[in-house]
Image (tube, rainbow, N blue to C red; front, side):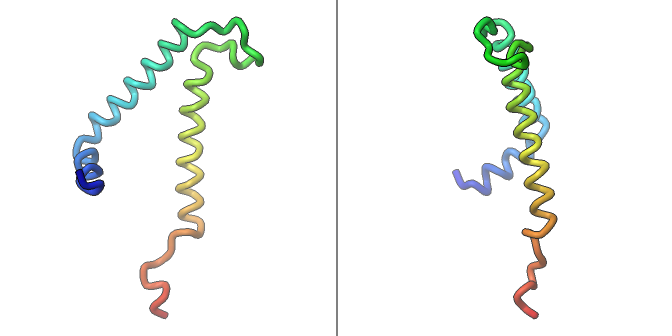
Length: 84
């Protein structure tokens, strides 16, 4: 399958993609709460239920926000940049 076709396929089903992502995140958090022991945690933060799931999600969101800001701050430029 062509990558452009895959992106178009997922873009046309954006609500379903969001629902699947949220479901996977909730399942990971519930699995972490129920099956992972925090008895040998090294830091205080690790004693909170689903800490690493939430930490990973927040980290990904921050990377996306920073990347968008960085792109708009200077990396992205006009298409006719070299024509002048």
